[in-house]
Image (cartoon, rainbow, N blue to C red; front, side):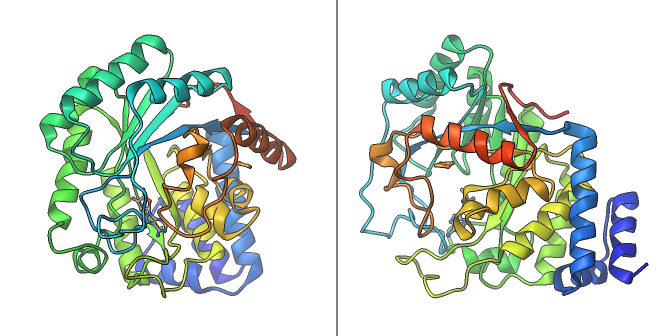
Length: 347
Ligand code: 5AD
Ligand code: FES
């Protein structure tokens, strides 16, 4: 057996990798090794979750953001973005359409927008929860005070997504403005877990200044933090950001990392992201076949889709929720997987 395959076997058995083993898997050109990694990750995913694909209805409810992350298209200093906010009724309309399409998780994602005070946001969460008690609510509104996180949890939020972006403090500093700190990001993730949320962290693949060493730290962080969800997708440059001229992350590297994460953490909820679908027409299918088990079709009103562009060429911005839902079902069926009507909790 070749060296690459041996590394995959060790990874599956011990659920961890050394830096040198990670380098070998990421840099190998050997097609057999890559395919073996994918096969093992898919086998592990099938043993835990079968061929079910969980769907999450993404509602991008505000593109105002007080932050200025260097990679992000809706950063505050991008003056070309037409800003919008959805009101409670508009959000509830998205939920209604989503419910009828079989979604049982809503992801409320937005920039760090001070307009949504704890009072306003908790009122929205309570309204969704009282209308759809059988649905999970996932919040994704960035870094907030622990007290705010607690209030949202009490109002009915079940899960929280906050990508750590990179587990290397120096690298973190290169992706973010001085005002933001790595230690606060870590503190937020800890409090979310303590409060009782199912928590998701994650990072972009191929972000500027990322190295095998920083990726190794990401994997070590994930191993110690034991999140319920891990969101990873390729970095894709946005033309109105400081990183406009950087190269995008690659399909191969993203698939490789999805498989590694699946083998390290067999039960994790792992999305095949929209960014992955953006860099390759079959990116999401390939993500599922590499060990992912979640997709997140967009439920945002079509009128605002073009305004929530974190990166260039984002897919599905012209498609109604129902179109994406059916498109996804067909895409998954073609590869032998089944979209299920289910909250899709961590097993
Ligand atoms: N390319 C890919 N992903 C991005 N994100 C933000 N900007 C980009 C980009 N240019 C990701 C970040 C963030 C999540 C909501 O979207 O990781 O946490
Ligand atoms: Fe949106 Fe295919 S998933 S159109």
